[in-house]
Amino acid sequence: MVDENRLDIARNPNPEIFPVIFYKVADKKLIESIIQPKDWNEVMIKANGPNIEIKINGVSTAKFTEEGNVPTTGCVCLQTHAGAPYEVLYKDITIKQID
Image 1 (cartoon, one colour):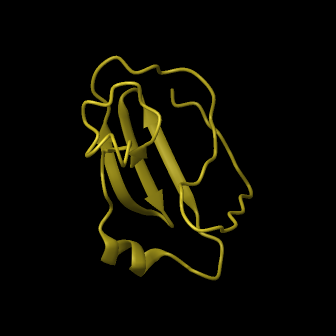
Image 2: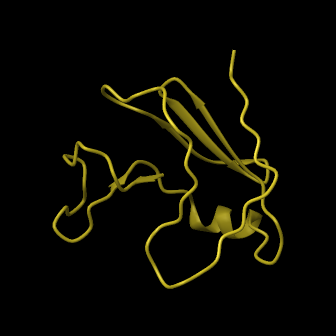
């Protein structure tokens, strides 16, 4: 998990040239074994209070617990990160409240 816009930059690896915070990096071999490069992939993001989990095609790839005072309400935004020009497609987006 990467955060490019967190106000607290204390955890940035090098804020002058790479102003992002890395929370969790998924295992590359695991990702390569579950991603379908030429097909749709299902991504599930579960945010329950400060606990966040990402599953890709049903496999848990990252778990993280937020620290500090982080807002628990707001907007859901879909984004990509910097790099060469590329296209990202989304479909069948569902948001469910956790009780």
